[in-house]
Amino acid sequence: MKPRAGIIGPEDSVQLIFEIAVEYQERLQPVPFIYQNTNEAADIIKQNHQFVDFWILAGPALVNSMKFSGVKQPFFLLELDGASLTKTLVEIGYNDKKRLESISIDMLTKRDVYETYKDLSIPSSSVYVHEYTNETPIDQLLSFHQKLYQNGEVEVCITSLRSIYDQLISQNIPAYRVTPTRSNIRKTLSTAIQEWETLQFKQSQIAALLVKVQGMEKKDHFNMVSYDLHRLNLEIQSPILSFAQSISGSFVPIGTGVFLIFTTRGSLQETKKTISVLLEELSLISDLPSNIGIGYGDTALTAEENARLALNQALNYDSFTAFLVDDNGTIEGPLKEKETITFEYRTENKEISEKLKHCGITITTFNKIVSVQKRIGNDSITANQIAEWLKMTPRNARRILTGLVEQNIAEIIGEEAPATKGRPRKIYRVHHPF
Image (cartoon, rainbow, N blue to C red; front, side, top):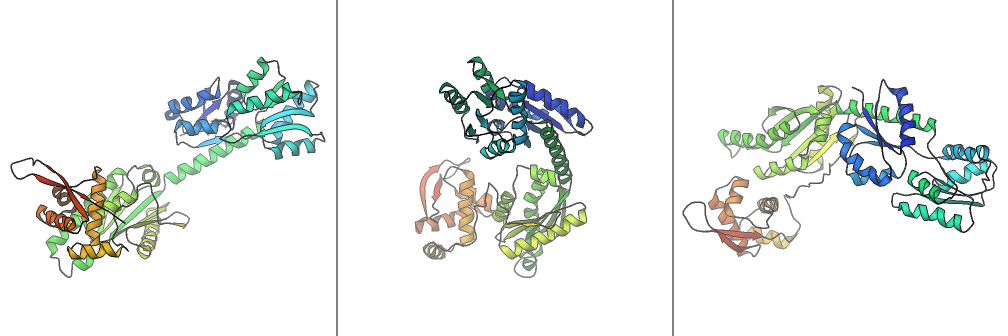
């Protein structure tokens, strides 16, 4: 299926780009979007992003529009360079017979401008350049030209923005536009098509996720009967199975505490459920540390081999970490995501460690409670909530909270009426001073 390229810019620029895009009609479907003013661009992108696969931006000022739209689609910018300027200078000097030595120019870099003048053997001492960054206000570019012309320092103004060009012309200021060359447009379209096809190929690659909960095999031999081990294994499977469903993956248990998911690279990258959330969910079910290895490959075998390599990297690095090995064998990790793991299994705070020892609570359990309180979101927690999240009895949860209160690590901040008959339930706030 041919990608749809949203071509956005003023009418004359879009028409030229569209005309050249027809040359690529077997690999590209151009979709034109014309604006009268640059300020309209962000809304156009936001309202039409679902109809295109990527964007071709007709000028540098549109990068800000792309940013303000909030759309995360790929975009490709038509650059302005010395060749673009030469085309405009030929129009000014050859066609209109105007002097080229006294000119104001916006958007282009000083290097491109002065090198072009040097290559053409034209004096540039009275050539003024206003370079553009994404923070440059458009009004600043307009006043730049106006002041120079009104003060008699320049005879002609060159801008890359249609809106500034129109305003200068309306004020009887000689103005010209610099636009991308045809060769630049072809180069940009070719690059866009190639990068899109490469992205699609990568998105269709197979992704394998290998999840390992450490120590499950030891529990099988020591202090856990087989029924309890199977129950724990089933509890651990639940969040992994939900994650597999979120990425349209196939789920394969391959041993006690070891699970394999196959999906596509695109599905994994597009999911809203993050790897760190999965690791956190696993940490709330068991005291055992977990790790994840992710592998990409053109075949299921290659993806699984890369996932095993990634898992080994994670196991050797630290608990509750994930690593990735791509199709080129490049290792990335530990993976950092917006939603980080709030659960920790150790602390260097000696005071807290001593207090937890006095009340018979491990740092692992304490951090799980803090994590649950954070997830609930109201800076408070009850024994029933702890019991539900940490898979323990309400009585045990009350014992833990009582111990934390005695050590001034938690406090009682209120009560709530139970759903059925019985005593009011205490509401606690657990402090996390490290």
